[in-house]
Length: 548
Image (tube, rainbow, N blue to C red; front, top):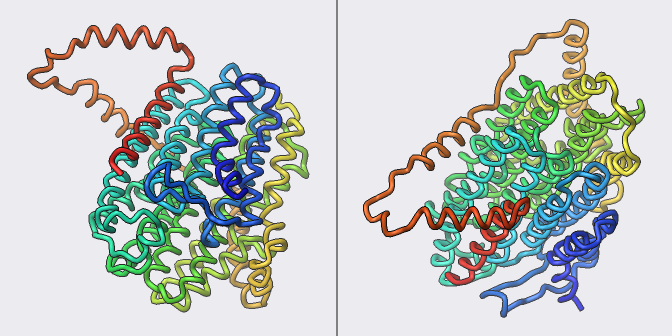
């Protein structure tokens, strides 16, 4: 019966949407569609081969990384679905929201259980295109601008990934399993196509420009899964598509490490100058996702200790995904509802976990990362990593101060129970996970030595002193707009609108096609966006099947 479980993981969310579209009251139970993913994580059944789907199609879990990513993603999707049911209830476009939500969830689950690149690409495409509908859910000029930039970069990323996928299939002689790809060298051009394509989704510098625009306009639940789960899809894509042991990996590991190190500081520096809570958290994601990129660079540089890097990559993904998801839910609550004191105090748990607070998942990953770098060829950069911990602590305190400012608004109503319960559960995960995950428990104990505690605590304490000083005597920070991405997006739109028609263009009756388009728009009305995204996803998947 393992075949039924593997098929249910990506298909049950779509079935859930069909039920919700017919019976809207069922949406309160929509989080149950994540159950097959939880069962697979804890039982790890035998992989499923699907020769009738496309060549080499195989779904399953074959490593700690896939298991950990699927586990925290399922938990994050389940909790945020409950939160979204409370926050979006009664919204006039709720049906469209659930459509994009479930399609994105389905694509995310599919790419995480994919053991072949074609299945991964199909899931990645569904997730990427459906995320556009979540970003533009709250209509208006800002969501439209953010959505346009996101869609432009998403389509660009899909083109790069598809080109890299075809080149990689050619290099491997038609092999269609990730395990086989790890044994075949990769060409530099192919690797960079994949690296940039997945990097546009992962959001590290300089491929992050859509993040600061998308998060402030998206619903809080959507921001939580965008940052907590979907960004990680780009990271796991790089990990699985590019061989750990190859000439490219060894030659460019240092470059990737330096980019990740710069991105970690860049996200903090720009984030400290932001005024909106979710924009601060967006730049925090730019900074934090860089650590995952850093871990991959370390694994490329030191493939002999691959098991250590696999463990660290899994730990860091779980830690960041759940902590950042909790903070985005908290940002949504503090901006719209009046929280009790204990509810606001709970925000400090995921915030300080990101800063590396002892007895949290942050302490485990920070301690393990520092020890691993200390024994690598990048040991000379360990002081910079400690400085990055101080910077991360400052940034999360900046986010907390913005949330406190939002709470001072007049007329805020108490939060709904479903939203509070979701937030509380996710906020406690940085404490619960290290004590309940057996392979993390020993690392938690190691982080409690006096030397480790000192290395973890002094950056947080120093950041707290700095924060208190500026609370007593506020510093007027300059406003820094995140308009670079918006400007580039508008330039692309202008170029598209003024693209000259080449000779022979009169062979196409533009007026006739325009009439057909208007009829379709009138017929589809509010579902035009949904229809367009579905058609794009189906076309790209069918094209992939045809060419593979």
